[in-house]
Image (tube, rainbow, N blue to C red; front, side, top):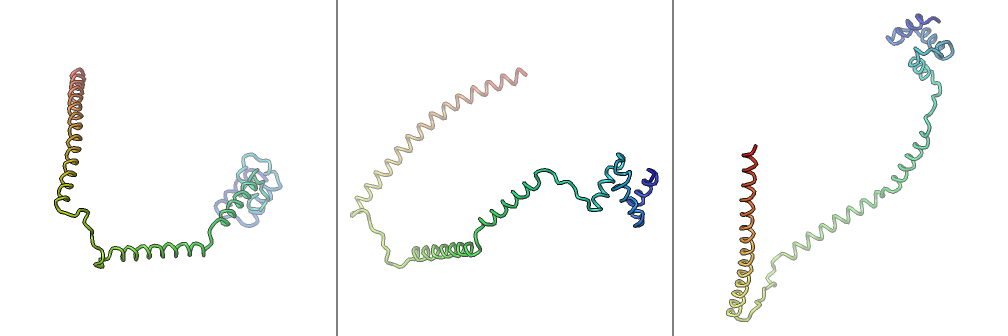
Length: 173
């Protein structure tokens, strides 16, 4: 067949207006005829070979990658826990939560039996210990305040130096 006739048949084929006989002629041309060597119709040749079911060459390594993927999926399926295991685990978690809530409910419920005990026998002794504790806390607090005031003084000096530096940089620009 001539190139012009093939072009006309291809245009009809791609437009969807070709008859079965014309499609058969195109298949014969691209599979067995001169079209097998034509460089200008390489894409059309691939299309007609695919339509006719001609075996395509499998790229190298595809079967190896496919087998590895299948093995990995089978291993993941095997490692997946069974449905009964998952259900028992959920039931155990729910039971633990219920027991925890029940325990907290009964432990915090006032029943009148729990009485706080005094740590000192006399109120004077308790007042003396409270006074000592407050003096200790006050002394520690004062020591901390002194340290922070020294730090505050040093920070004030540093801020003054930084302000002078920034002012000189701004005036120079």
